[in-house]
Image (cartoon, rainbow, N blue to C red; front, side, top):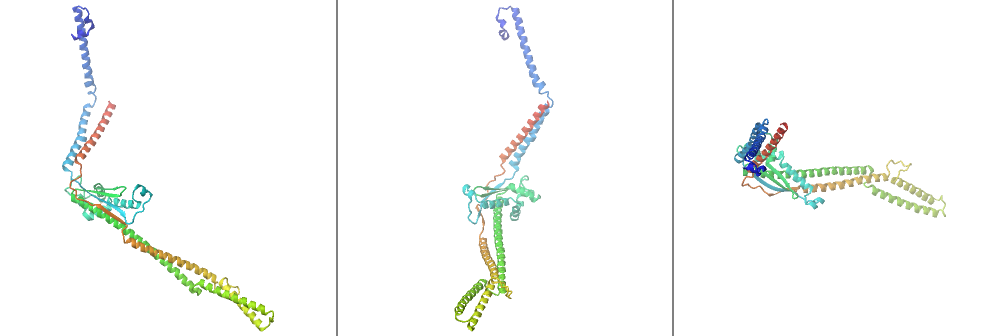
Length: 423
């Protein structure tokens, strides 16, 4: 009746035969549409997609890969972190490296509050030393750290193989030890992981001890170098002063005088007195020559005294400046001796000042060596941890599941993309 109602001609005045023919035609159309619909669904569901080559193999590959790449690693991680992995305890220590002298704040430090370059450098030295092989060797002597991390009670994946070389142990130690610097305060935070609370505390205390020993070694080396350098400078200046004094003494012995300047002053005094006497005698000779004959005995005697005084003045002047050509003396003029004495005396005075400065520097270096230049101030000592902080069992298991799922999904997407291109 539904087919009859949907046929518009059924609403007209038709005979029973016509109505039967129309109804039969409507039923035939409905059956044909039903067959076409079933054929289409069968084509798309069975004959098209399912008939592609390797579809079943791809489904099995997806199931197997999911089991291998996701299910098995997640179950293995859950079993390992939940039942096998050893507990790891963390001990923490905090300290600062400060200078023994008040730091001079530069422009950047005054604006930002960051410590000076020297303090930062000393802190970096300590932090790099803690993670180095040298620190690990010192820890081996103190607490036998290799035995602590290779104990049979530790699970096989977490413990260190004691047969491996020191280079591998350094990498393992860098994973178990965390060192950081909090700026701008410059606080050094050291965190050490171990498999028992007692071992964590012992190792952390040993790390602080070797760090302080490093600071003391650096102090001793700086002080020793400073004192040695000051002592070498003092020895050099002492030798220079001795050489200057010896040269001055040799010159005095050769010239036959203690002080050329005083000898020059005395010679100038003699020349001045002789010139004064010569002037008086010349005046006397001139005044008496007006009344007495020049051939008179007293005039002849006065003339001889004037000539002798003039010769004496010339001789004294030649000794003071340049030697007279007629002089038989081979001695150097006093002016040359004064120049040589002045140079030697200047060298002696310079050597004395340098020697005094070297003595003061050596004394300052010794006073500085008596006090420490750097300090390691530990304000948080390691305490025994009460509960393990590693491993993060649930978190690590979820991370393994998430990462393996992502990798599996990417590989599946690439496989489907390649299959679609090859179809």
